[in-house]
Image 1 (spheres, rainbow, N blue to C red):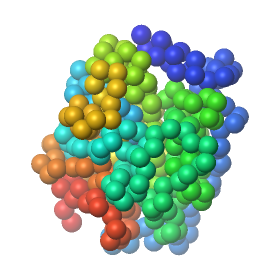
Image 2 (cartoon, rainbow, N blue to C red):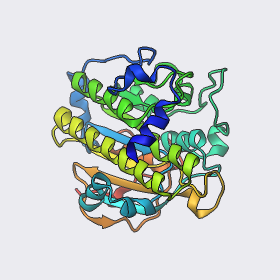
Image 3 (cartoon, rainbow, N blue to C red):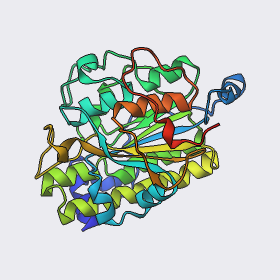
Length: 318
């Protein structure tokens, strides 16, 4: 069943046969940046920084209630060893691009005004600052690896030291291809802020329905990719990093986007350096809190404009 999801994803690409080794297509916008060194890296260990490296992973369309049903070992491990919320909330409209805009800017749609969810030809970027622009302003290195082409238009030029995504003609990458690009980058650099997007559950939900056998299998596939990312991060950072795993939305039937609970309830998991282990979070978590938490972890003062808050209860008190 898993291979059928990957093949279906590959069918959206024009040259899939040449890439069945999980190699990104030559048209991907990939650059490699050297690992940040010297005073800029040293400044990260100032009093307010909790870590030098933050990874945000968004598993597109991941409902919290599928994690236990799928038996996904990597997600289960992160929940067991970290802190988590199984009733975090995303925005309305609970669709991919608006939700990721809120996740990565820390503000709601009334502020960022991103309500479109297609691959627009006008390359219209989000008009407010993102976690990437705030990190870059502090001299930190950033990277992002997307499984859908429409992400690349969301962020203005200069947001990343390295980025990769499918071309518009490809549309969607299987998670293995995205993870190959991210892992290759981690072998060459050690970004302070890394974002990785995995698309399989959303694709399976639209194709077969949320909570179907095909959807559950797609969650297992995404979980395998997440395990590969952790292995690459361990190699690059040792254990000196923190990962946040979340989703942009859930889904019901073969759709999402509404205010109903199945669509707006998402998981939020944090694991790594200085994270308390093995208990659910008692505070309410919103998708805007992902941006706020990432900035707080890197020791960046939260902008006054941000609507999210850092999820402090997840971390060991100093």
